[in-house]
Image (cartoon, rainbow, N blue to C red; front, side):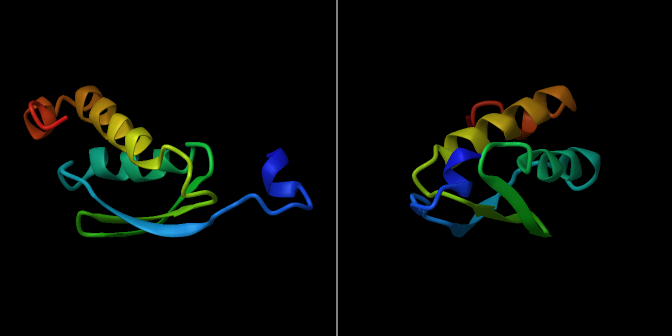
Length: 87
């Protein structure tokens, strides 16, 4: 929060695209909505299996956080076969 409100702009915002392997339905919707709870991220659009994410700083570990989140959502929703061996 301090970085976003400071006078020195230390941010490097961007829109990034992520392809999810989660099936359509509740698992995918939960995943996309939960992305916005990660620090410095906001789910901007879901089109098919493509999620567009706004990030405040490309220097944040965006990909690692999103992949970890997707893995946990898959496990929680009993979609082991979707990600087992892929993460």
